[in-house]
View 1 (cartoon, helix red, strand yellow):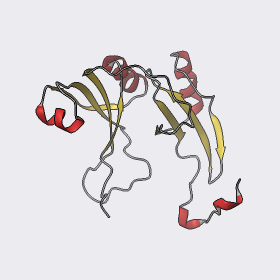
View 2: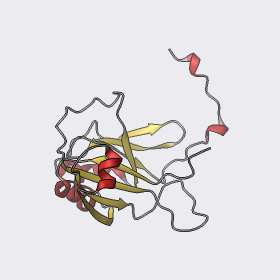
View 3: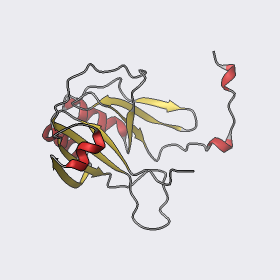
Length: 176
């Protein structure tokens, strides 16, 4: 096996300052570090573009990573927002929630309904209001968009318990 850890997740954004306010001030992520790379040969080579200029903020959740038990060290999953100043990213239309390729990033929160009301008052766009998920437990789930249309999810923690795949089997062939 090649993968030993998950290091970070990154989203491209069109306005780093607007996204900083959204993720830090509205959602409550903690800034780990800001970075800026201007015309660095190793960046140009890595992304196969010339004269690259990027700005980035790296975040972490104050509560750590849900479901992860730290046996040693301070290993954390970090979340980055990156703006390409040059070359500028062309705008694209938002993909539907089920479109391939697409992805979403999920954050664990407590007491989702009041968080939803606060975000709604701030003008955040939602896929739907909070939905009570029932399956391998029971909790609220909410899908919404950041200012650039990146799909995010809030998953209410501490209100249910998910089962490990080894606890049950599922025959996918029964669903058509």
